[in-house]
Image (cartoon, rainbow, N blue to C red; front, side, top):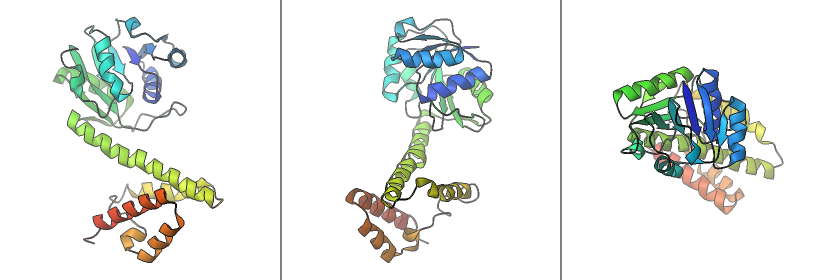
Length: 254
């Protein structure tokens, strides 16, 4: 099986390596920055290009893994060639291909990726959608080569998944960034938080997030919260207060 990767960012880099590992030959990598295309192409033994007009026509599958707002323009600029086309976005609907491709779908791995860290895909959930049952089965089979966790999901479900992922990953990581700032002001390293973070995540294997909630807000410990607020700058205090109020509202029946 031959694949073309359109994109050379975090998702595309990890996908290209993983596909190569399971015997799917990545034959070409596109990026609008040729250095990025060459870096990934060299890593998987593929050709590199920075021109959409030079996208090879003979591959079995074309994987568009670019910024969400660039997916539609890629679809517009590269003509249909009868092969299977997919994108990897959580928020772009499958209809971006409608009327422009004869076979198309979605191949969405829900994970936080970094170019510098090779991701083990075994447990990464893939959410799959196809323009027909036959297409969906073909995408299922490809996802199944990489992961044991493959699900069908509509475009609407994926949008909600993406929102949940933003809360679970992106917002959580920003809060860790703020925690790192607070610790820096105290002259302490961030890694003192790692056992607490690990335990918090591990508990979610046994309890729901609501059941595992702890801290001054769920206890309604107003004195502690006011003491914390007095020590924070205006931006952090605003976030602290907003999240504390949200926790109290969520648990007001308990």
